[in-house]
Length: 249
Length: 193
Ligand SMILES: [Zn+2]
Image 1 (cartoon, protein in one colour):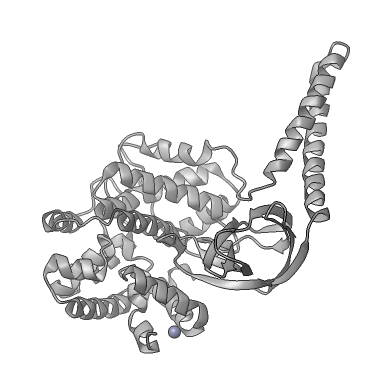
Image 2: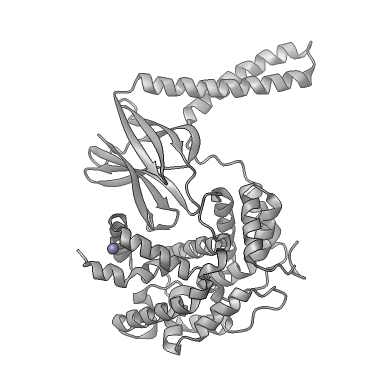
């Protein structure tokens, strides 16, 4: 156990990233408990935020700006939620049936208009399948857990439906605002033999659902912690995180 | 839109605020402008840390993806510092993964590169001058440890090993350097306000 003075003396080292692995981990743990150090760290980050400009600029090779821009923009639209994969599969099956039906009608109906109608129906069925899947998980749940999340003066609600048979949690979150830049939400299982990240969560103003596999190799799950954490990972752990809600078993 | 001649984009708090607002509104042209504005500096920083041009480009690419995916109107001000912070953190993560011990010769070469004038064709940022002035104001022994810590991404014990100094000496020099730098850079605190 390090004395508080040690953390005071190593705040800059934490920000700059020169601590050793074990020291980093001790510092991260300390930050979760110490608002004074959190505030001081914020100050140091602000003071040193322009220091990267101490490195000299270099000439950008031809074509790189275009490559970088395309690398960002030419991606499949990313949904950070692990959004109901089984539901998506179910939706595609329903979609195939609709498509077959549509092929027979197509001979007599104007193709373009019908295609638009079909797209609408597929979207509706996708959503319906997702809802049905969620409802199925809820109906077969063996346990229901709930937590209030407090973030930046706003409140969000998280409800967890635990199903023994699948060892899965269906998590429904309502009202979580988008995470601040450079941070994200995390869901961590606290188990008898250790801790494991269940999911990284995105904020959403509406209601969102995700399915998370419960760890089965770390003994009993004792609780789950919902955190706001830095995107910066060191040795597989976020650089800093703080708890915004706890789900007790 | 790239290569030479490079468009001279000046960094002012107005440019910053405008870019940030347009990025939040998913303006793709704003992304291109941010890339044009910051890439020479990001590459300079990250190449100095990783000593590998391909890996540096990967880090810069990951940085812009992270910025585009996470930018948020309610987030903290300071778009360009955020871009730098993400890039530097990503570079440090790679360094730590590599656990690479860089030899002194490479480091000294990097040191020599960073004290040359900015490459021709880049709009010099006024802030850059202030930061360099702050770094040049450090006594040489402190500047050396800051170079290794901040611009090469070494841990304290790696620095001690590289310089053949006791760990305590490295810690003391770093602490003195942080104090001086924070005082020297304090006038830039109000840049976004
Ligand atoms: Zn503290």
